[in-house]
Amino acid sequence: MCHKCDCAGKGLAAFVLGAIVGAAAGVLFAPAKGETTRRKLKRWADDTYEEQKEYVLEHAEDLKDKIKERASDLKQKFADHADEAREKLAEGKEKVVKEFNRRKDEIAAKFKKDEE
Image (cartoon, rainbow, N blue to C red):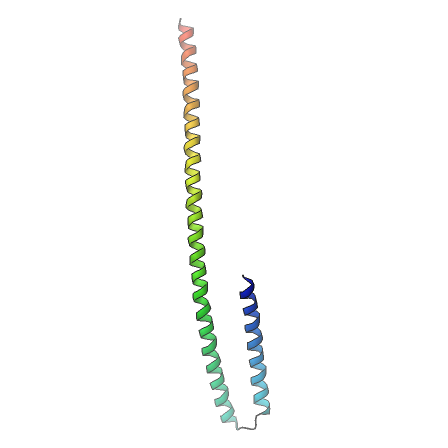
C-alpha cells in the first residue's frame, strides 16, 4: 500500500470518528424535539453515506486502473522471461544434439576401427 493511501485511510478514519462524536454531542445537547433530531440524523446519515459512497467509487476506479496497469506490466515481464526461456531451451537442445552427434561419431569410428 502506498504512503498516500495509508494517510488517506487514517484521515478517513479520523473524519468518521469525528463525525460520530460530533453527531452524538449534537444529539445530547440539542434542544430540538426527538422527531426533529431523528430527521436531522437521518439527513446527516444519508449525506455521509453519499459522500463516502462517492469516495469509495472514486478510489475503486483508481485501484482498478492500478491493478490493470500492474497486470499489464507483469504480463510483459512474463512474456520477456518466456522468450528468454525459449532461447535457452533452444541453446541447450543444440548443445545436446551436438554432443550426441559427436559421441555417435566416436562410437561409429570405434566400431569401424574394430572391424578393420
